[in-house]
Image (tube, rainbow, N blue to C red; front, side, top):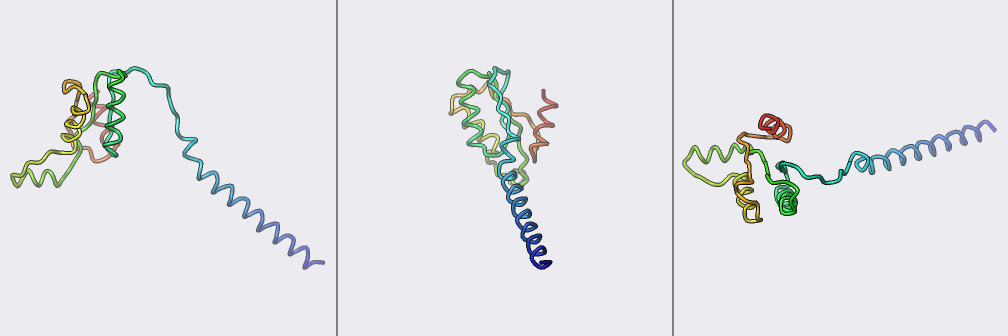
Length: 135
């Protein structure tokens, strides 16, 4: 009888661990959806585009601009050490920010509506700091 009780307790323990583990995995899979908050769009003075997936973000910013949600599009010049080394050697190529500005113009954003904040942002945090100074 003691062996049967021990076995029952062990089985209950493992079932409990399995259920707890499944609950943790399930909650982690959907944790991101609890962190996302969607606000209703409102007219603004400017659309700020953070570096990252530039094509996706630029397309979305262009759509918002074309729909009249804001009259300006702002982004921060990003840091690129290799670009600086090329300039030092006399080679001039367009930075990602310059390419983004050219693409924005081709998408219909008026050149006077583009604001490129000078800086060497290496992260989203640095972009936010440059934006705060500018604004």
